[in-house]
Length: 402
Image 1 (tube, rainbow, N blue to C red):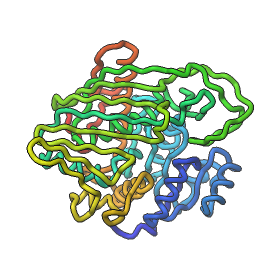
Image 2 (cartoon, rainbow, N blue to C red):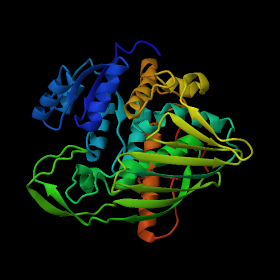
Image 3 (cartoon, rainbow, N blue to C red):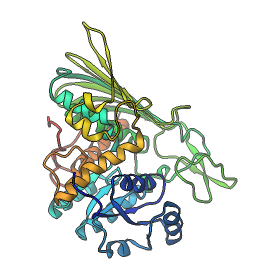
Image 4 (cartoon, helix red, strand yellow):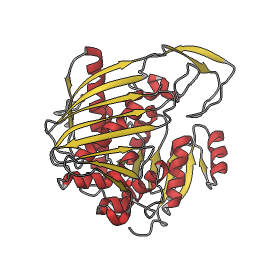
């Protein structure tokens, strides 16, 4: 990878994830030119706290800065499409948080706009970039597990356990019609498709809302905040707390995943197991440097993340030697290194390891099928022949279509 110090980036959003983006960019040597907050005052306060030189007062002001080459979109979900369209129109490369859009027709439009622009486009499915995930993807491609047959797992959190827990993601007009599935389940679903190289082609979903009414604070609330404001108003809930989803993959494999944002004690627990015809592999986000490898006729193994023992992609994602744990924050640096390698080249690679807008759009299509299945209480195929706006859906990078 070349010298990144000559590239300028700006970050839209100054909350939890926006801050992670700023810190990861600095670690890989990218100059953060400025941030755009939800208000000029909020932006100025966060820029000062983060040591960023400039707080833009508007998106127009950000896009008028000639020193900005790449824009990171970490704003609430309903702002992703208008902001990303403006960024692409200005000729900048863009990295957008998931979900890419509020609807599949919107994400299809962004795929087309990004392709026409020739700019690097990425969706921040950072979980792909734990080094062992990059390693496993290549191992499965090489046939080390044999034919993939069964993929299972969960993604559990507890930050919305109480009826006093509040965040903009609870509001469908800001977060979207899917909440637990859209917010964290999408990470698991994208990851499994990435690791196995197989599209999810059909789903059977059940969703439930166990907290039908929540108490919304009258003032602003930070994501993952534990503060309990005194003044609240009751709000009915229209999105799911939990989901269970059965899966069918393009090669005939089966799967199952459980998703919850109300599991006590589970702060950020993502687990998966992939069973093949020759071997199995399993991983737990709470021990991210350990990969379990299962065998029938010889002892099982634990691979400790070690650049010397991993595939080229695994080594590329690792920044520390073996025995020095790399966690959640490190995945952003690894993802951004891959994206900015293409930024230096001036265009997207043909098969990038990061999620492109095509991948983000495909995840929107899977989400639509999950929502349709839960409503109809039946199996629903993922509609990939065309998007709901009539625009042909793109095939995600590195994934085998049915």
